Amino acid sequence: MFISSYLPRMFFMITLATLLASCRLPGIRLLGDDEPGMNLATGESQNVFFFTSDSSFETDIGLVGGSEYALSITILGNWVDSYIDDNENQEALDERGFSNELMPISLLGATRCSRSHQWFELMISQSRCPRDSLRGVSDLSYDEDSRSYRFTANCSGELMLHVNAAYGFYGNNMSAANIELARLN
Image (cartoon, rainbow, N blue to C red; front, side, top):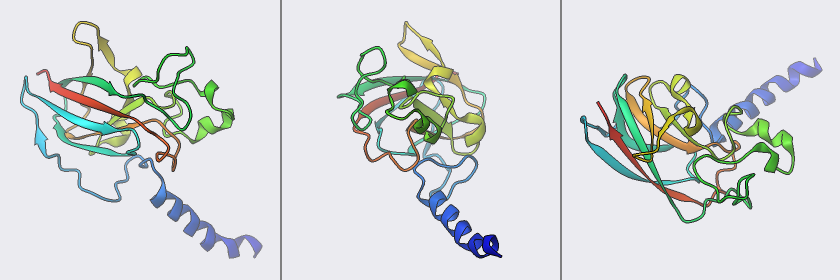
């Protein structure tokens, strides 16, 4: 009886936490549409201005499943997660993020959107297959000549961006970048 009296309240709290969570739950899209504003033609590119405080940045750029893309990142200003502005090598933060070792309490690592990626690492996904397409820049190949990350779209759908941070704590991120996406084939 004791447990059954708390089930409705617990269900309400879980639902509320899900709605207020900064990171999207894989496969669940609560608001917005998943129709991209534009599909890039082969050889075409598009720039977007990205803020790290956005937990689910909609680029309005559609990806075509099976097509290859190049993602170039120009860091604007200093990337800062709360008070952390350097990685574990004392280098300025960038799209590769930083190690969990820099967090004051290592258990906080369990709260980030993807526990298999660095804190503050730039993450990409696609609106129509978010679970299958979620990748960090560390999962992409890097081309030194063009200074861009290369990847193949898992499905057709809008490109989404966010940094790997804790659920509910995107407001303390103070950073921006210019992201250029080019379709290669």
